[in-house]
Figure 1 (cartoon, rainbow over the protein chains, first blue to last red):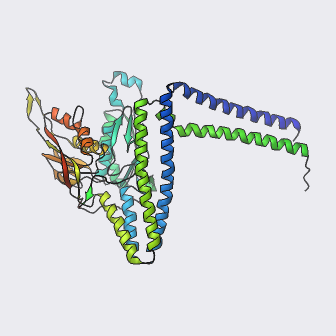
Figure 2: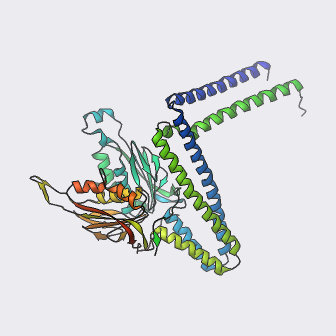
Length: 241
Length: 242
């Protein structure tokens, strides 16, 4: 390699790197301007981020510990059939409850707002072209009706105490904000789950009367992965008799 | 093959290499920061929202910490008791009991609220307006609001609502829940949780129970010190999740 090529390569690299940095700095500056100048708010924002980070760190530790617990549990049950059976019941229960990741066959439904402005200008109520919390509640209910065994919405696992709430222009599931498009995954008997696509069903209504973008896809080969619930399930008020 | 080493060139290459590395590092840090801060969600929040967000994360942290300690204790117990099968069995049974409670397979008691909804379908409220029946959607919304307010256990006319519970309509106005148990008015919904949160989530302006009252149905919401909610009595079995 002669000197010329080296200089060229180096020059090029420097340009690319500088460009990258410049873009980054601009992005960060850009976000800075929209952030309120109110220092109190910025302090709070910092505190929120720190609290979130603290939570995430502890969550990682918890996951480690849960793996260890499972190993210890397996270790202490492996020589005894009765105990292994009990252990498997616990594992199965955790899957139903939503405390462990599951995979299997099922369907994936995608529902998105209709952003066609021309359509909304003649449509009586533009609100109808948006996916609402009640729409998601209805879809989830229909999925449960056809025996879905595990459901997630944009990665949030639906557990027994999950709520789907409207929060301004986003939807909250398990207290976490999610936005359109909504990807709803369900594991169960695919043919039965596909029943949601029937004429007169809720998806049909969303497509035909609300003009929302609805897509439904059958997934075989156990390709659907539904993550575990990331919150804590514990009763504080209810007590077993 | 012998590689010629020019000392000057080597030093230069290393220097440039380090410089490049440093630059890359800075860039990645920037990328990561942008990704982590999740700007879209947090930058638009105002002070009151931020305060709520902060207290909710702190609350969540507390719960998570309690859970963490619980798992640690359990893990250590298994470790220590692994010698005798009898002790292990006891530990497993205890875990199973806790699991069944969360799954809804045990009767539970606690403080909470009782909602009663009496369907006034067909009643005339004005000359040309009659009351529509309470729909499955109405009930779904009641359940959803209660869970949003932290309900731990809910039943409708004695049917425990679990993770796979669906409410659906058969024919025109018969509702079914949990694999086919028929339910009809009056609907009695029991919910265990913080009674004040539960009550304020459904009643009052804009609450679903208030809405149903305005639509012409008879409703009531009562706070109780002790409510009993029955367990889900069928088997909860799965075939398709792996």
